[in-house]
Image (cartoon, rainbow, N blue to C red; front, top):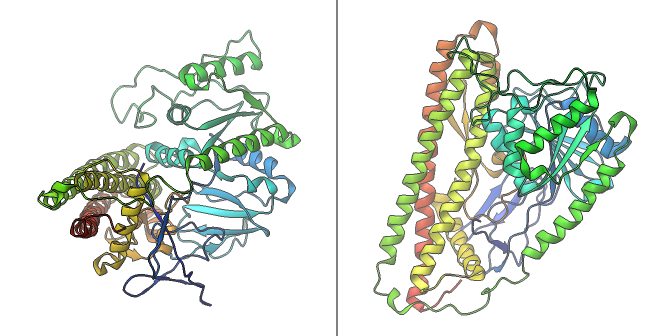
Length: 554
């Protein structure tokens, strides 16, 4: 896990009338345009906090609990969610491809988070008059409902699994792992897709999984195997045979429904096949319910029981005072004459170089998948949506790799200077000191940024935590991390430009795609180098002070 630290300010900042929050740094005031005061709906803790006075280090808070709903049918999933929430829930209607996040509040409300903006827009789920017109679909829509169930956890509805693709599965997997639970809703008239099996296999052993069966849109019809689903792989469904060679032999999930048996036998056989493909689901019972009959009481109790146990488990993992948080940490006798500074600089450059190589490989894979979509998939109009999902997954991977690299750099450097593997308290103290140094670095104050791909193929930079908060399909996971957040998204102009029929030119679209991805790769690699250089400089300052005084001063 990446090393994180939360800095408790002895003098708290106060909100201004303009809705912006002033956060003190060591050098000057810095304005962070977050959507609202900390703790309000639609916001999460910033990745870095700092104050005027020396700080008290405490372990970072655990992730908020969330139940992520996935499945092939948005109608069935949202019917189940509406049954859980009861009559107080508003219509759970969001644009196609957007995540729906339902949280608790005293009054109903809604907000749409659109990349390129710095604050959310009001959202109303009515079909007509749904607030300001948006140039592109939001990454997520947050609705607040005064339902007691949402005090236990947040409900998240992912897009249809048939539209996720490789990148979408990664985004949903990240949300499930952080939230803690997956609610898989499978209608009786829908087949099991390969992407769903891949997702279930990846998260079933480490998160809670709830399997729900619904009647579907046609209760009298049983689903046969999906002819479009082939063997499990990393690139989703196979392309059409006339575009990419001969059609491979069919290997659908689930047996052919026997004609002599009824729908019940087919459902049992399909579920047994699902368990055979994902053995971790062997002990999970199916919950059959009809949302129209409002028979969600059993599922509601099961989710509350899980949230109670999981909340206690997560709370028990964090000690109020981490080991080593207050003890004196002496410097190793050989640290004064060792070359720890040169090794720190060399290691930071090595980690940055390795991450830049990974970015280049991932960009090449994204280019290949997008070209396949333009040539043999949804065509040019589907390119913006696919590319936006791809760069969202890329952003998550780059941020996670940066945090993991910083954690590795911090642990190795502390062990080299202090002569022992640091315990959790020492790592938190050092991480807080590095964060202070990073906040005081004038060259690192523009790290909170969004790389926005324009319709011209250029990559524009939008600064501020508020802009970064618009990118997350599922918010959270940023509390206390040392490095500021970074994200990539598509502007609304891309959607407006390529959706027009007279611009549906595959050759022109591929040229634009190549230019946009090249600019994204260059800017991401540049930001990775800058971040590791800044972290190495701040960590070198902390360790130099420790060597000079003979002990860790943080």
